[in-house]
Image 1 (spheres, helix red, strand yellow):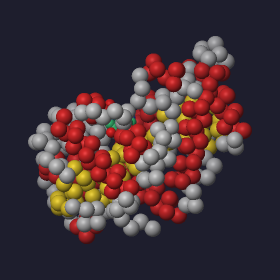
Image 2 (spheres, rainbow, N blue to C red):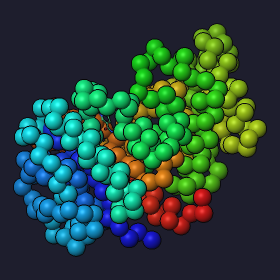
Image 3 (spheres, rainbow, N blue to C red):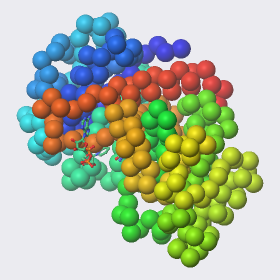
Image 4 (cartoon, rainbow, N blue to C red):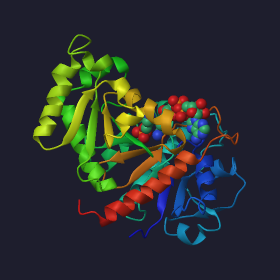
Length: 332
Ligand SMILES: NC(=O)C1=CN([C@@H]2O[C@H](COP(=O)(O)OP(=O)(O)OC[C@H]3O[C@@H](n4cnc5c(N)ncnc54)[C@H](O)[C@@H]3O)[C@@H](O)[C@H]2O)C=CC1
Ligand SMILES: NCC(=O)COP(=O)(O)O
């Protein structure tokens, strides 16, 4: 049963996080969204939106006001926000709102956490040593980075990048049989727990063109991917591949699996965003808490201009609720 509100960390205050959170609140009735509380700098919202806002100081306090106003748990003044112009102070605020959001979700005061986008480059400048929010949340929840799986999901496609925020030239060295096996295992477990799909059909993309053409165009399939698939099948997982990457996302191919495991970030995210950008959700499997996020970044180029779609944020909130409901009734 869903009892508590959800918590939305506002992300970089100069990005589109504040306005898409406000946009989601405006769509709360038509999109049938559960109550949520935004955490961050209240001014970052007032700067880009003239709708009703109420300052609260707990997640619980958000519920009675949610129907009439967007509840914002004001953390700190980010030093004057100019949409589209990131600052180091803003990066600190993004990190603080993420920290609070994780704490609120972990303590059970919220049913789950939805994270608005952060600017990784700005975070790195203020001492953030994690690749992204996924790894940071995993650490805070005591989950290994291998077992916290990034998944991007749209209405007709789910993709998992096996390697994530690393330079492309390092991918071949990072792909190992153990890593592919661990990601697939965590994906299958997470899909059972979060989506109720007990025996998900996984499809593994090759790394090279034509999945290596039997070794003539690269050896990663023969040395890493095929042995990983064999091991996973021996363990009882339903996994196919490695498939020619360019053929894995055709309409017919997409009917054959529940999630595609991809060798690197863009192999996974390009098809997802091309097909479902406005409904795309980034979620993390393998955590003790529910965590989702819109599929896009800070979009500084359009922040504060009324151009940002709230579609992905709405989809992220809806998916968080759906996952929370599934988990509440699941035996996993
Ligand atoms: N989950 C997160 O926190 C993520 C953060 N980022 C961060 O965002 C920053 C910018 O990354 P980019 O690669 O430029 O991706 P981006 O998603 O911010 O922007 C790419 C393009 O999509 C457009 N766009 C993004 N969101 C939109 C929306 N809601 N409605 C309409 N158009 C939208 C932007 O205007 C831009 O033209 C980087 O610092 C990156 O680290 C990127 C992806 C996810
Ligand atoms: N491109 C996806 C992305 O950057 C998500 O990163 P995060 O959720 O780990 O911050």
